[in-house]
Length: 234
Image 1 (cartoon, helix red, strand yellow):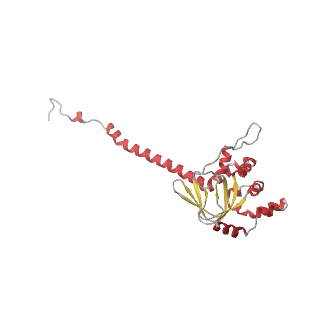
Image 2 (cartoon, helix red, strand yellow):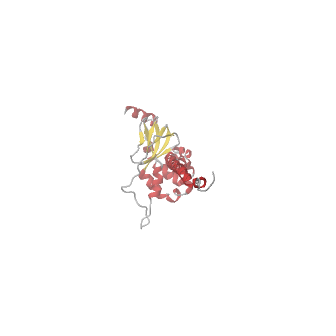
Image 3 (cartoon, rainbow, N blue to C red):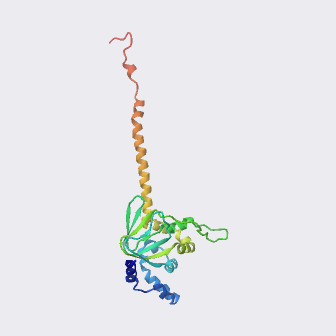
């Protein structure tokens, strides 16, 4: 607890940024948020976005601090946020034990964005359906290797942004950026490749085992040709 308090004080200097911003005019708030969240330009996904959607995301982002050794996500638990890493080192640990490093400028929990897009639908009134009782379960653990400073986009806020900009977020270029940059989707792709490769190896082995018996069955029976017939000279 003391370690967490010291880290929080060192990172914020005791200043509540949100409280300061709330007392400023909206246009100044927007400019300050854009300056605060310039790290978003490091994330390929956000380089494809226009300012309206970036402003909507920046308005929802909240600073969060994590101490070394803590788990931001854990396998089997809910994925209830997207985390944008400002400073620190983490690792993503998949179910098979494979590990992928995460650092400044990386994002984790990005599978939540794709999940919302895939499960969203339009009701009869033309509005977006809500996700009551539905949740995404993590298939990996994201662990802090050092103290981490990050900005968090909560699931409820992400749902609002997704509903507002669904058409843009479904763009193939944006979807491709999500999957290409994401350790989560890379892990999924690697697992599928491994399964396909193991299946292919088993199929080749079965084919090799059956080949000798098939060749034996195809050999002509030459015994009758060389057998001694009555009345035939030796």
